[in-house]
Length: 195
Image (cartoon, rainbow, N blue to C red; front, side):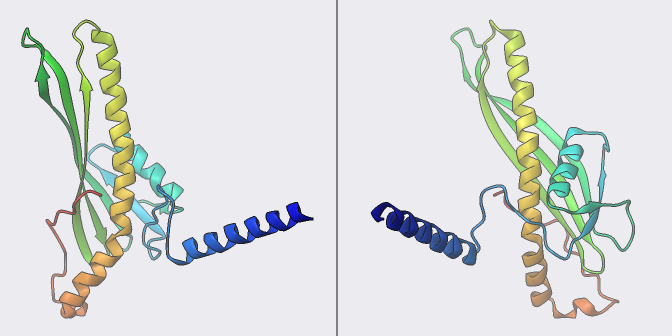
């Protein structure tokens, strides 16, 4: 009887905590939703067959957003460019690179019909040891790091898009004449800090 009472108390405490966490808006890491009013989106890219384009489309499908062909009345996510650069962090005694840092950057633009467009940038940085004695291993490690950074960038793009609705509402509050069809109400060339 005592054991049954303890199980009931534990279950009740877990249920209350779960309800409180859900009520405050807590989301588990990786569960970021794109604004609810975006039910479908078109995805264009500088390279339709690139890895980042495939990963972004996969993230959108996970968010239950239909990917449709580009149209003037459908929101558009345009991947403008991606860039991988590296720099030397430390050297061996013989002046060959001991540790390198890879920086992956993707620029993209989200355009919402009748509202405007916004530029975003997602950046990831990783470092790795560059052992000259294992050339094949360091090449494989670098490829793995680049693919990992692309996957994280696609997730970061979804987080930035989740904030898009709030930023658009803030912009419309600051610029009350956005409903005037003669006004250019595009939000361009603004950079959002990665999160």
